Structures are given as structure tokens and as C-alpha cells.
Length: 129
Image 1 (cartoon, rainbow, N blue to C red):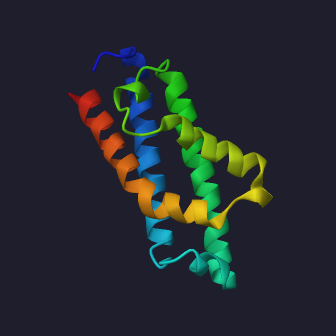
Image 2 (cartoon, one colour):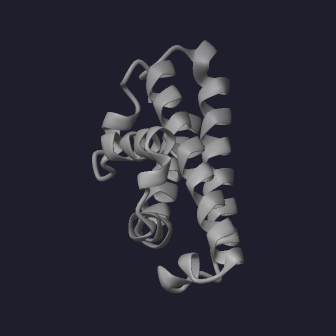
């Protein structure tokens, strides 16, 4: 994939690796969460909710940086992911933290991470070939 300069390729691949690690860590740390109430009804659940929000913020910020270093050319090659929503979730959680909806976080954790991991794998594969 010749979308960006070869000098940025190591940075891009490293950024993709960081995203993959963050997603794996988030999935592992929330594996015991089976319903949104698991985030809300215990102190440990609330801690997991807070931690999940922080990792989602980091993922969104990293996606923004990835888009910047690829001059907007990489993410658009995988339109199945609503990239603006990934970045927007970061903005909402970072700037309106006390308005974060546990249902939204639960949905992200349970439904949106696997497709994001698939996109990252596709990017890494296409950039490595």
C-alpha cells in the first residue's frame, strides 16, 4: 500500500501495534463484564468502567494521530469502521466525562473492538506487503 512515505512506515506500524495492544488490554480487563450493570453496581465494576473510558480515550486519540501521520489516506481504505465515531467517542469521554453513558461504553467494549482489531490487522498486512 503506497499511501504514505516510507519514512513514516515504522511509525505507522508501531502506532497500529499500540492500538492492537490497547484493544487486547481493554478486552481482557472487561472480560468479566456481561451486562451494563456489571459496570455500575459494584466498586470494582465502576473502576473497570473508568479504566475502559481511559483506554477508549487513548484509542480515539491514537486513531486521530494515525489519521494525521497518514495524511488521511489510511483510514479511508477501510470504510467499514466509522472512524469519525471512534475519534468522536474519545472527544466525548475526554471533554464530557461526567456525561459518559455506561451503556455506550458497554456497547463499544462488547461490539466495536473486534471489528476495529480486524481493520488494524488489514492495515498491518497491507502495509507489510
